[in-house]
Image 1 (cartoon, rainbow, N blue to C red):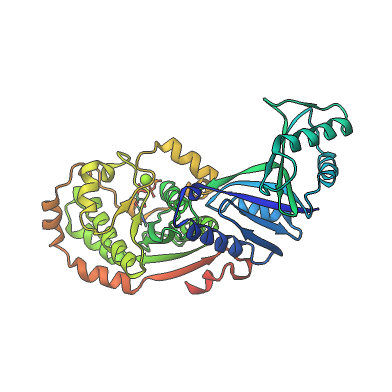
Image 2 (cartoon, protein in one colour; image 1 turned 90 degrees about the vertical axis):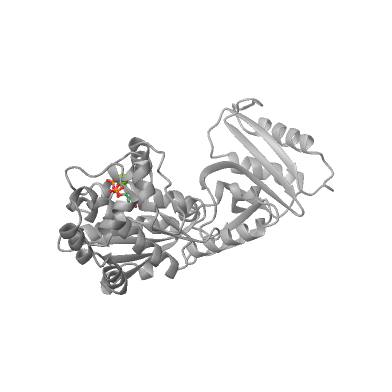
Length: 397
Ligand code: ATP
Ligand code: MG
């Protein structure tokens, strides 16, 4: 009898013709995270199976961070489908578990098997009642549901399941560029997009000396947390000090943030195109600040030809915070370092910016050349989740 992990697919199981594409993607992602752990993987259209040689707990823990898995079932595989062997194995498996009530559910993948599913369940249930003390059958609300799955020449027995993350396998929907600040919202936005199968690259704007090395390290740290789900991450760091200072010097103060954000969108759009990212992603949330009113979003969005996905647009702050806590970015996000968006905040930012005014003000600075320079000088940090490559990024900066 061997331990086996059975993975039930997430939403990808609803795919029809292209289900194989999603499953292969999931398998690749799983092989990537388990590359240094001895195991065997195979799959069919319904489920994926992993036979670990040991390290079951480590593998299971890793799988709880993989998108595309609905449930992680820990079970046992017998290399026989003989009923007597199944009975003995069932008792053996259950001997260390405390429970008062149980139910047996059987399935026959092998339709030539001589007994029907209800008969198999009845047989095994009776055997458990006879051989385990103080237990009884409860078909409505049992403590344990023992699943017996009869296959050709083998049987799967399981009752323990762990909730998976759901969603689609990372990369199955292509790439997107996340505008990643040190705040609470954008890491959560990134996580939600990764969940939908989008592989993300991240883009951080900094403005030294107005923003600090600590602020940048905080973003690297947040990116590393997203890398766990994204399987690695490429972080683009773009210095916008000159551009930001020019904005501050030349643009009427109520439009500072609107123009700065239009510039950020322009740079993000160019970097996205260059890196084959199909969408921009950010942590904007409707109404949160002046630059996130509907009219502001419209005036800012207008400079980009890419779809801008705002996964937390309709979330309350408290909902964003609880997700940030769940994915362990919250504590890092609240470290008090300045972001380039917060250093020059005007007293009265415009709430309903007008496109024509933005365009008029932008003529006051040679923003094309600032943008060009900023992009030429971008620094790229590749963050890996593999132990052997960790911290390599420190050398790059
Ligand atoms: P908070 O959680 O405090 O709201 P925030 O990161 O959401 O922080 P906002 O000023 O609300 O900050 O910015 C809206 C969005 O713009 C961010 O979620 C992020 O996607 C993007 N953004 C802001 N500043 C930066 C930056 N320095 N680099 C990259 N993207 C940024
Ligand atoms: Mg925000």
